Image: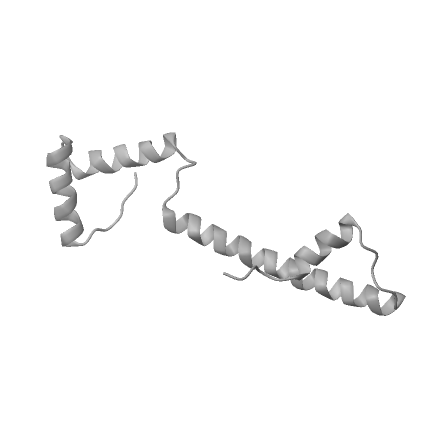
Length: 101
């Protein structure tokens, strides 16, 4: 059994939705909504997706900082300009920071 609280306004809106959808009760509506989510778990609300993207952007920025530190450390040790290779291009991309909007 699952129990959760609703405000009076939420309960009234759910009751109206029950009438419009032809469900017998708020419990039946909640059960149908949960079952729908279980059948389509990959569909997440937009806010959850935005939150995930923001989290990933933060991780990418942290990686950029770490790569920048590594690059500065290796540049100091070798005191030679880095060779122009694919690996250096990837490193430059990661250390350059986010693109201008």
